[in-house]
Amino acid sequence: MLIHTRGLKKTYQINKNRIEALNGIDIDIERGSFTAVVGPSGSGKSTLMYILGCLTHPSGGIYLFDGTDVLAMSDFSLSRIRNRNIGFIFQTFNLIPQMTILENTEVPLIHGSISRKEREEKSAKYIEMVGMSHRLNHRPSELSGGEMQRAAIARALVAEPLLIIADEPTGNLDSKTGDEIIEILRSLNTDGKTIIIVTHNDRIASCADRIIFLKDGRIDEDR
Image 1 (cartoon, one colour):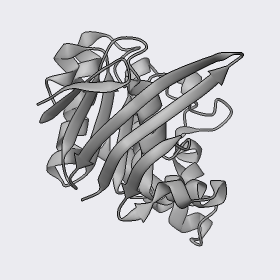
Image 2: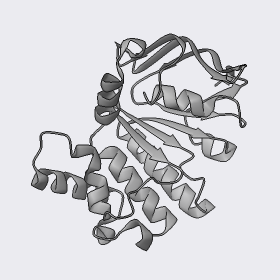
Image 3: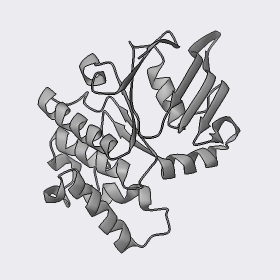
Image 4: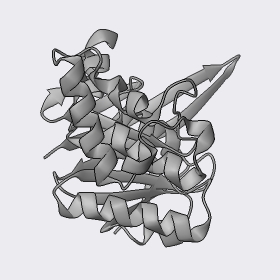
């Protein structure tokens, strides 16, 4: 089991208002699975993504990531988990504009113990995997949206994480390019990667093997 949660909660205090973004989430996610998390705006899906991705602490409940108690982790430990075990793909790509695609892909490896040459070789391998070798030395401003997302996928993969979390990965793309990105994610899943995709798009969600529907901070349906 890669992810295990019980009674997962997240509460925000905004002025005098107490907002229950998540209110008792029970999820088990197996290694090698492909799961979609869907729901309307305000359903809690982004909050759940941030917690599962170790970007923020839950307010209560149980969260075990690969057997480790996330609630007991310091911010430093959370950072190490994110860097080593979780790859993120965002709707807005989050590439560094001043860097080439090769340099962007190297970023997750910079604080590791491998040499610069090894970083470059490993990054080039994953850039080739997503079909972007011809854009290796281009900057994000020279790429199309689909190319930027492919580069973002290479960056997410380069540290060889246990989990890939994709947040609306096709949201800024046309339908044809979006389908190509989903095919890449499905191929990664076929090769054994655990994928969680967060989306409001039912068609994109249907590509996953499991769909978790959130509503008002709770699981409304799990199929």
